[in-house]
Each structure stands twice: as structure tokens, then as C-alpha cells.
Amino acid sequence: MVLLKKNQKTAAGISVMTFLVAVAISLVYYQFYYVPTINRKPRVPQDILNPPSITNVGILPGSSLESQAQNFFPSDVRVSLGANNKVIWKNNDNTYHSVTSDNDYVDKISGKFDSTATIGLMPSGQTYNFTFTEAGVYHYHCIPHPWMKGTVTVLAEHD
Ligand SMILES: [Cu+2]
Image (tube, rainbow, N blue to C red; front, side, top):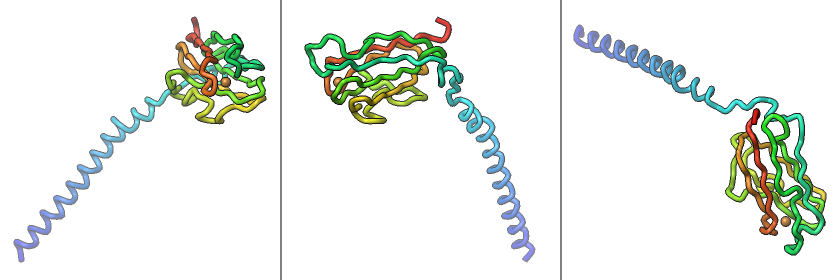
């Protein structure tokens, strides 16, 4: 009987130790892994998320014709982060177009740079907007009319 009681005490002691070790591991995980991971998520300044100016690009009437030299207009735009890094394309043509990254670019805030990923092909009169949050050179085209090409050059905030 005495021996049994001693075993029970030992068992109880082991469970308490196991519990304390589990608590300690949880605390270490929270402090050194969970909290730093949360803090690592990108923090983008408000003036980049909602820049004071918009950059407009039109899709000209007749853009579906390969013989027409101008389609995205202007086809080459330069914007600055925190100033006018939100671009709005408007389809002024009478047929469907898209604004699609040449290299499947994905912005860490705005997601895929591709109108077909969010609104599909753009009918006449439709707009598509994309907010660039990182400096870089972004080439794009239209899926139904691959000769339609454009570039957005995004400069850093103080360039
Ligand atoms: Cu097109």
C-alpha cells in the first residue's frame, strides 16, 4: 500500500511537471515566434495606400485593332509612391479589354496586377484600378489583344 501511494505521488508530480513544461513552451512560442510574426506583416504608410492623386490611363476607341498604334494612353506612365501611385484604367473602347501583368506580378497589399483576377474582362465604360505599393517597373498587356502594351514605372517616395 505504501509503495502504491508513493507511485501515485510520483505520477502526480510528473503530470504537474509536464503541465509546467507545456506552459513554459507556450510562453516561449508566444513571445519569440507568434508576436514577432504578427509584427513582421507589412505596414504600408497611409499616403501610399490612399495617395492624394490618381493616375489615369485610358483605353482608346479602336484599341482592339492591331493596326492602331495607340491603345493604352498614355502607354507609359511614371508615378511616385505616396503621391499618385493609384492608377485607374478606363475602357473608352466599345469592346472588352483587360489590364494584365506581363509577369504575373502580385503586390503584397493589392494582390494580383490583373483585371481578370478581380473584375474579369472590362466591358466598354468599365474602370479598373490598382494601387502599387512598391517601387519598380511594371509591364502589362491586354489578354484579348496582346499587342496592346503598357508600362507603369513606380518611383520610391522621395525619388
Ligand atoms: Cu484589349
